[in-house]
Length: 112
Image (cartoon, rainbow, N blue to C red; front, top):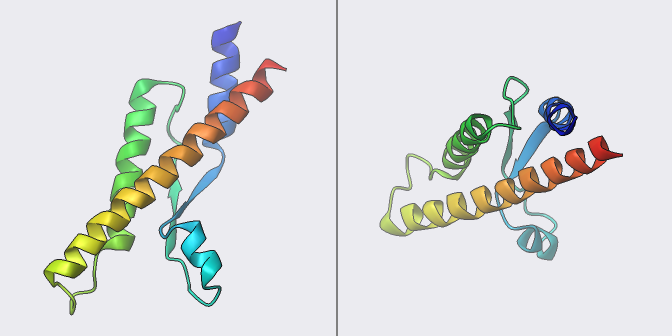
């Protein structure tokens, strides 16, 4: 019974699209004119109730963070690369927290 609920929660969760916010929300709130780079990570094909599904989703999130945080071709300075790495780390941290919250919400809903 519990496994069915987990699979149902995974299916519900997999139907959603995760928006990956790249810059910290507080920074964007301080400067409303700042456009926050973002991308969507699709994972409807993954079973996020398994460790393999979570690993695949994490890999996709890492790739998305790298893609949107990579400095432009004309700005490959050491400082730009350092900032890009920090951006990737923040983005992945935020995205993983969102995924964790979504999974918890879906599992709680499935238990009702």
